[in-house]
Length: 163
Ligand code: DQA
Image (cartoon, rainbow, N blue to C red; front, side):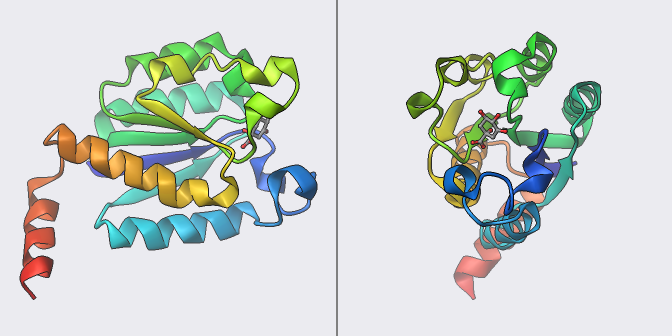
């Protein structure tokens, strides 16, 4: 069991060159490396995946029920449109946090509705690539609150504090 599966949805593989005035200049690979750094700071074991395909994202979330304690996801445009992904997120029992780089509430009206945020523990929007910091911090807090950290990792953290 890993701690967090981090999921990138459609078109996020084009970050960096895709509408940089809205999404910034960080590529998906940059953001993945920030997430690696944050994860190791929190001693969280993570895996990351990207897909442009709705069905693949549904399957990844279904599988995560048996392989990850928490999910952190930017489902991109599917957050606004996909009932299938909403249902997959709702099925996941552990902490779930939705993130978006841009501030959807200051954009077109169709982006102001997320089908997946209401079935998440919370959503972080509008902080650009800093969602990596804020999102993993939120997940870490939710996991600690649930007492759902891997006991081995908790032990490792305690050891670190005593070093
Ligand atoms: C996005 C916001 C969505 O509205 C959009 O469709 C995206 C990216 C974001 O991170 O700001 O693809 O999820």
